[in-house]
Length: 209
Image (cartoon, rainbow, N blue to C red; front, side):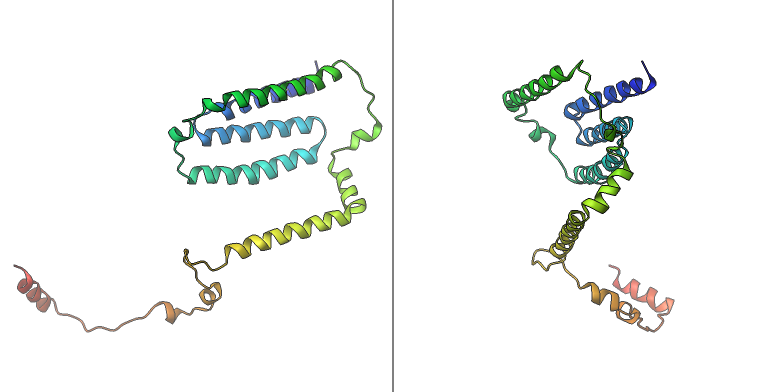
């Protein structure tokens, strides 16, 4: 058994345990953290398969963006655990059917491919590397890549436009006016005459019952 095989079994075991804890943990934050751990183990397996780009994308996109956003939402929203787990066992029949179908499909694929040595072409050694993907994206698929970039840019602009629209149920202010405001508009200094201590004590004595 080689060192790479040992690493694969270690990553796979930790990922299976983490995935099990995702669906069994009572705290949503704990479940999300175990899902982050599972993503890191999957990225490690991609690295063993020499698919560095997929490993980096998995860490940056899912762990760095999606899971951080999910954690932020879970920690900010007050989730009623009792109400959430009220009808938990009522979904058991449907979950069992779906899980059984997935297990049968994976078993059929693994049973046919297990123990069969398939010749690997030489081009497969460069699949998944950053250099090979970059050469394909910026040469053969450059137009599709640019179209996808434009669509993502439009999505960002639309999200910002929907956020900054004026609504009656929220408090709105003009960012341009906030930038153009001057010091004298925010602070006004008023000169007042000094009050003597004796006069102030006399007034306090008169007001006292």
